[in-house]
Image (tube, rainbow, N blue to C red):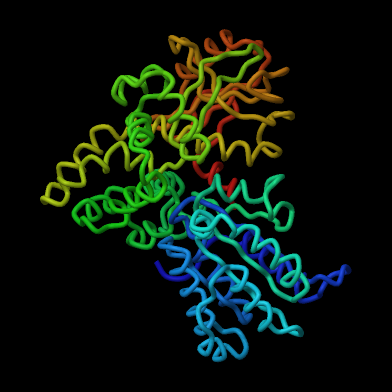
Amino acid sequence: MDGFIGRQQELRSLNRLLTGVEKGGRTGRPGKALLVRGRRRVGKSRLIAEFLNRSETPHLFFTAIGGSKDDDLTGFLTELSRSTLPDRDRYARYRPPASWDEAFTMLADNLPRDAPTVVVLDEMPYLVREDPSFEGALQKAFDRHLSELPVLLILVGSDIAMMERLNTYGRPFYQRGTEMVVPPLSPADVAELTGLDAPEAFDAFLVSGGLPLILEEWPDGADMWTYLEGALQDPTSALLVSGERALAAEFPSEAQARRVLSAIGHGERTFSNIGREAGDLQPTSLKRSLDLLTERGVVVAELPISTKSSRLTRYRVADPYLRFWLSFVGANIAAVERGGGSRVLEGVRGAWTSWRGRAIEPVVRDALWRLADDRLPAGSEVIGGYWTRTNDPEIDLVGADRGPVAKRITFVGSVKWLDRKPFDRRDLAALEAHRAQLPGATESTPLLAVSRSGCIAEGIEALTPEDLIAAWR
C-alpha cells in the first residue's frame, strides 16, 4: 500500500501542539510534552515520522534499543549528530554522555531559542527500565530547560501500562505532558486501504487488527481469502511474524501468562475453563496471570450488563489480529515453514463462520457506541452483552445508561453475521424471548438487529455493515 491513510485526528492534535509551541503561550514557557502510547506495530513511529515530514520542523528522532544505558546514551549522541537540528555537526565533537542528566543538559544547551524544534524519544519504556534515574532526569530537564524553549518533546512507548504510569501521581513526570493513544487503523481505514466493500473490510479488519504492517502487504482489492492464501505460503509475512514478535516483546519471561493468553485466544472465556486449558493452573496463579494480561491491555475482562449484579466475568483477547493469530496461526507456523500453508488455510475455512460470529461482536459494540447519538435510543452510554452461567440466554447487544449494573436498559440487540442469510422473523422471535429474560428489560425496550446480510423482519431497527463502518468516518 502506498501513501498515508487515516490518523487525521492524531495529526491534527500534533499540529495543534506544535502551533502552541510556536506561539509561546501566556506563561513564557513554550515547551510542551506529549506521551504517546499504543500497542506494538500499530504505527506510532510511522505517525510521528509523517507528522515531522509534513511539518518540516527541525527535529531529533531517537529510538532506544533496550540494550544498556551506556548503549542508548551513545546512540542518543549519534542520533543528535544525524538529526535535522541546527548546527548538528557540533555533536560529533562531543564524547558520549555518562548520564541522562548530562545528555539532556547537552541537548538543551544546543537547541535554538528563537525557532521551534521537535525532540522524539521512541521506545521510552526501555530507558525507564535501564536506568531508575531516567524519569527524574527527564523531569529535571523539562522543568529547568526544555519547557522554557520552543520545543515539542514527544515520548513514545508500546508498554501501555508503563506509559500510563509515567503520568500518574507520585511519578516525576506527573502532569507535565498531555497524552495520546494511537489505536489500530479503523475498519473504515481498512476499507480505504484495501479497496474492499464494508462486509469484506470487516473481515480484513478481523484478520489484520488494523495493523499497518499487515495491511501494507494486502493486495489492492483482494478479499480476505486471497490475502490469506498468499500470506500463509510465506513464513516471513507480517501475518505470521507480527504475533510472535509482539508476544516476545510484551512477555519476554512470563511463560505462564502466555499460556493463559493462548487459552483465551483458543476460545476459552471463563476463569475455570481458562485455567484447565492453560494446564490446570491453581486459582492464585491463574488470577495473577489474568491480572497481568488485563493490566497490559492484552485481555479484556467483561461482566454481563443488566439491572442485577453478576460475578460471571468473561475474558477475551483485546486485539482482533492477536485473537486470529492465536486461534489459527501461532501453533501452525512450523507447518507453514514446511510448506503446509494450504492445510492451515483449510483449517481457517472450516472454523471461520463460527469464529467470525463471535469475533465481530466487540467490533460491532464499538461501532454502536460511536453511533449512539445518531442511531440508538437516548441514554445508551454503555454497550455490552448479557449471559448467564448456562448461556440461557446469551444476548449479543445490551444498551444501558451505565454498567455493568444498570439503572435502565435502553435496547436489546442481536448480531447475525452470516453470508447470504438476513435477519428474519425467526431471529426476531428469539430476540424477543431473550429480552423477556434480561433483568431490567420490558416489552417496550427497543430491539436492534445488526446483520451482515440485511434484515427482512418487520418492526425492528436494523443496521448493516455499511451503517457500522460509517461510525469511523
